[in-house]
Image 1 (cartoon, rainbow, N blue to C red):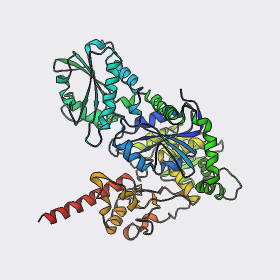
Image 2 (cartoon, protein in one colour):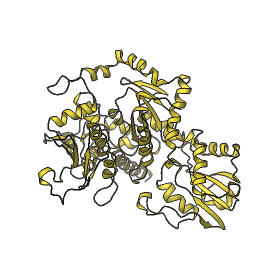
Image 3 (cartoon, rainbow, N blue to C red):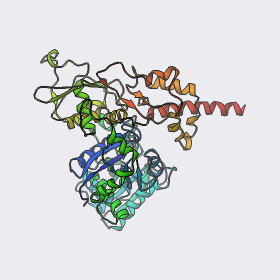
Image 4 (cartoon, rainbow, N blue to C red):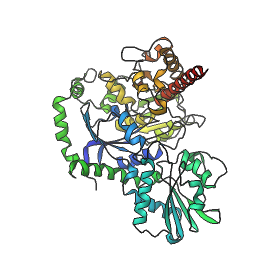
Length: 529
Ligand code: SF4
């Protein structure tokens, strides 16, 4: 069992989605579960497609030792190439910016996933004898990296070798043989349990696989938009088919995340608790790190002598200065010390009548629910979009809770602002971000400067798209200009805490890809003539 690591942070990294509101749920839920166990000083999440991104998340973490666990199913393309690149890692342990960062294996390849699969199979088909059941573990299958299917094949092998009593245990895939669509030909038993080996109930497990299995004629809505999930069993091809939700939603996956941290310590430190040795590591960083010294010599709180440079202390100071609005959220405090968060346009205090005041929620977690959908119920993948719905009220008892809620409304925003005030927030130039695109997207950086400026002006427009102020340029010596110049300007509202953008988000990268692809296709067509 993993011992406490009071000097360390855990960072769980997930894929996320700009389309599916359910994709990041399991990662958030497992992080919340682990946070409640008080093993780590901090527990944070970061995503490839949602916020916080993999650069900005480091600004919201204050510990100097960080364990990163990819909440991914395989050791494939993402865990081997994309995540190390985006997280700026140089190996299993990276020392940079005054920190020690450990990169653990993804959850999906841990042997304890076998236990979860067996548990899930029994839950989905209660009372059905294993001896009369075919268990099929389903994955995506992809040509990008052979390891994608390996994690599933390993699990199938482990279950078979463990003699767990199933009539047969099989693997099947959406996009490569053996195909899940052939499940009735692949399996023999009268009962068939299908468990999707995916992290979340996203497009594949809820929408694509049911069609491939023949349970549904066409792709359905996302999980959270359904009233009822599944009515097992489904009677198809003369068999009873039991379909489970994704293995990543199993609540014991939080244990596997911790297992991967323990595994990392065993593999790289011979089982010694790194939590115990963390102060020693930190000490060695104390002397040499420029960033750390920048942290320590930064200006203390305005007019004060405080040496507390934590994000919560910065928040306390900002509120004392009357800077009580961030994005579309206003923060007030009553005489009893209770903080109230509400939409900045909603009436508060004496203006609010008993009928117009919404009932108060008291958990910071509620902020994530509020921030998830706009007033029309549409998913908000970009939390800094100017579409936060109104008509809610959060009453919180401490600054720590306020900070936690704000990290849900605007992930990493407080940390970035603190770093900016300390003069150490490094914006990543757009050209640098686009140059990291590989494979079929390697042309992304071919967009012209003019295209880039127009794209930023359109896709980052403050009134309609995103409230953040950009702190990066096109390149290191080329600031935003022309139609994009306004995105770097400071707001005139002295009471507002700015939302900062330190690196182009996935929306902008995706817009750049489309522009570059259109340009590339145009050139190819011209060359072919
Ligand atoms: S790149 Fe543009 S849209 Fe994306 S977070 Fe930054 S400012 Fe907002």
